[in-house]
Image (cartoon, rainbow, N blue to C red):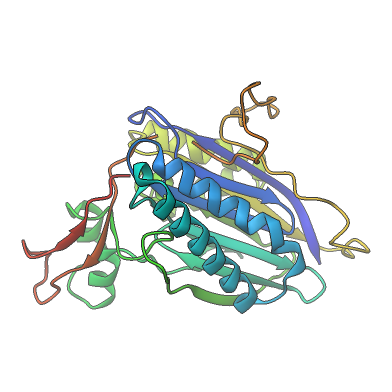
Length: 308
């Protein structure tokens, strides 16, 4: 087995002025990060996370190694915030997938509510568990999935990179099969488009990652585009993997460079040499503590005032 076609697309959406999402689409590494924090702090956090993942990902194997890399990204963001009061409190989600073609497995590291999905046999399966307040309430039986979709605190996340010196990372390994299609996305997609519709759109695109990415972004914008939207898609096909997975140097695509339906554009002349992956203000908050004794969220929530 080996990685086949891959594509990624990011869009500011219809409500935000800037794009704070970041992505990496550089086989065998794929990742999405959704930044939060005012004054472009979320953009900085997501870019730092993406850059940290790229720097060492090709040296690694296994889910725990990917999780350790995510923890390193957390440390980098946290230390950056300590040294720059203007971005204090910034943070980002991250969901990363590192494909091991020879082992036939995918290692996943995950923090926050960006998601990883797999399409196999005509079914869509969510591979990651959201670290969000409503997701916790659904898992505990205090909310139904339908109630969660309309809950006023559905954008509150309970875990993020960069807000604390240490972070708990979900690490898992999944086996891949020829014909699989994998999707990484920010919540700008999943808050606008239901899973059943995601599957229908990918099916209508014939499993083509480029067509599928465009269809998903269009659907999220068509539903209101309330947040930045980022999708990364790749397929697994029959065939022998290349002789060496370490030969090529990572080459990330930036949100500023990504153009729907077109080829990546050159960065502006003033762009720093660090690879860029995304760049807006949003309406997300990180909840570090919550009272969950009732079926809905009460007024005793303890908030970090982080706007995404």
